[in-house]
Image (tube, rainbow, N blue to C red; front, side, top):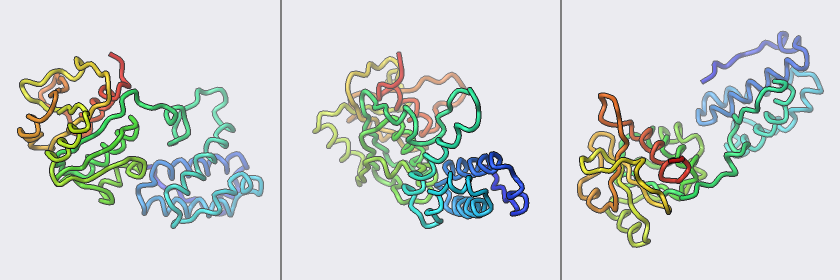
Length: 267
C-alpha cells in the first residue's frame, strides 16, 4: 500500500500544470491498486476530489470524468473511469520509455485466452486469503470455474475479497457441500480430474502433457487432499521442490500449476 500523501491547498495550487497532472496520476494509480481496501480507497477518492478543486482549469478538464465519482461509486464505475484517465495522461510522461502495463483490463493480457481453460476445485481450504489469491490467479489464466467445497470460504468473505481484488466478480464459482460430489459431477462431464499433492506416487507436474481442459484439485493447507478424493482423481501430480520445505503455499502452488495446466507455459 502506498502512503497517502495529503497536499495543502497552497502547495497544490503552486504546482505547475504538469506537476498537478503528475500528482493526480500518482493518486489515481494508488487508487487503482488498492480498490479492495474500502477505508484507504475512500480516503484516496476524497483526496483526489480536493486536488481537482485546486487544479488549474486545463487540468480539471483533463480529469473531468472523475468528478462524477464518489466513495459510494461501484468498483466497476471507478475502474471504468480511472483506467482511461491514467492511460491517456501517462503519455505526457516517460518519453520513449517502454510501456508498462500497470492497469487491469488495459493491456494485451486482457485479449489472451488460455488454450485449455481450467476448472479449479478447492478441497476444504481454511484461509480466505489463500482462496482470494487463487481467485486472482484463476482470473489471470481465464479459468472456466472455481468449485468451493466443504469449509472453503466463499464471496463475500472480507478476507477473500481483500486478496481477490475484484476477480470474484469476473469468475464463475459454485459451492458444494463435499468435494466428492463436485468431482463426481466433473467426471460425469468427461473432464479429466488432476489432484495436486505431495503423494509418493505423484508424477512431476512438468512431465504432464496438456492436451485438453482439465480440473485441478487443491487441498487443505495442513492436511492436503483427502485420500478418498485422491482415489477419484485421474492423475496425481506434484511440484518438485529443492529446499527443506516439502511443498509450496497452496495459493503459490496453484499459480505454478495453473499456468502449466492451462497451457500458457512452455515445456
